[in-house]
Image 1 (cartoon, one colour):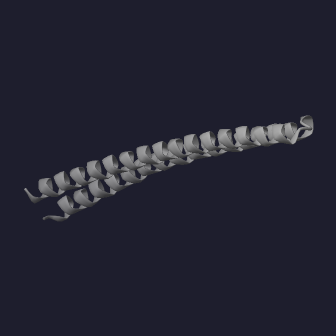
Image 2 (cartoon, rainbow, N blue to C red; image 1 turned 120 degrees about the vertical axis):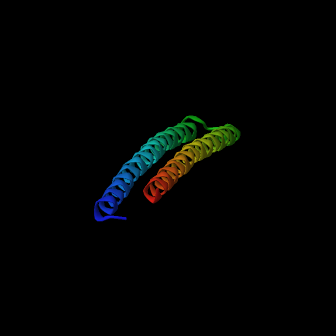
Image 3 (cartoon, rainbow, N blue to C red; image 1 turned 90 degrees about the vertical axis):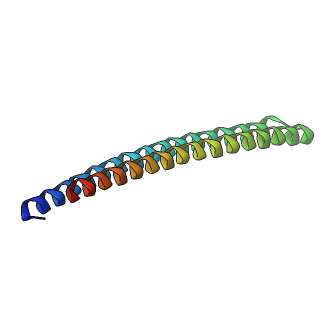
Length: 119
């Protein structure tokens, strides 16, 4: 291998690593943005549930109605938490899939570069 070919190979590998880092950053940005949106939605939902609970306590004088209201809130919270969990898993699964594809693409490109430089 002459010096020019070695420099070209290093330059190509460095360029691919920069592109890999950029693509990895895009995946990370997506995950962070989606999880942040989800956290904000969850915080808003919890505040709404808290307000609903407070309203039940103020407006209801019958203990059994308070208890039924609390059961309704608990069922709502359970549903909300399950939806939140499913959304989180979906976001993270998508990120994992994109990362696996990115790594596979970069390994394939690196393999092609190495094979081309051996010829």
